[in-house]
Length: 58
Image: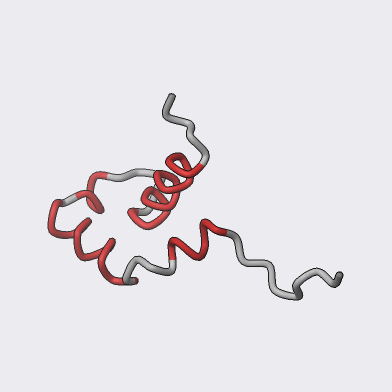
């Protein structure tokens, strides 16, 4: 049994389903991009998706 040459995590597969400009467009519409200090809107969404998948909300 040979391991796969490509290693794509479930997180990256789910994140690819979100259109690239959707997060930035929604962040600009709601003014989130101007109020954030350290996280970009895209990295914030990625962190929230990771939290949901890893059940860190209990």
